[in-house]
Length: 82
Image (cartoon, helix red, strand yellow):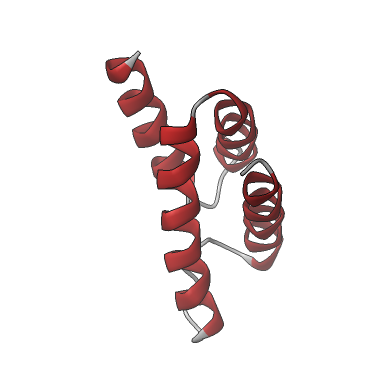
């Protein structure tokens, strides 16, 4: 499971900040894996909190406003799993 989780984390991280069709898939994976893997959930929550903090400072760390809003929703849902 460890190798699979690492690849999932890498794939999700890759989609953060992208401006393409893949962002929605990354968000879907974050939610699906966040339900089944506490390790993936913890790491993605940490990364999203960091990127959202940068967004709040004016940087486009999570892509355009639509993508950023989606990642904020992903964060809320992941946090609700804890």
